[in-house]
Image (cartoon, rainbow, N blue to C red):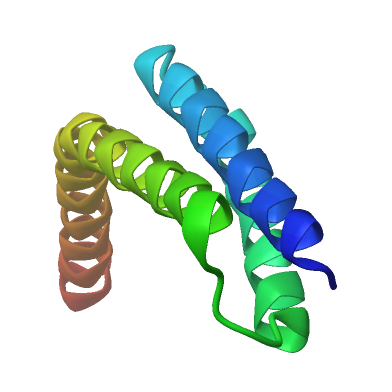
Length: 106
């Protein structure tokens, strides 16, 4: 990959992360999961192909894309954490109900 290709992948990941934030804002968890997979594919691409460190303007663009991704990730976590807590509570309640049903043959 060229330096330009690397920067393009980081910028694409930043766009995907922004889309993930929109999906989380809309509580569209299926879309969020799809976008996470797309982002993970780009991460794998970078791991496999990023040969050298970037310098100058390209480094600045890469750092800017990473900062955008981190900011969006923070907001996504703020939106998903309560949802995950509710989901966990539902799962735990269901597990408890099953254990009680098995124990008492209900």
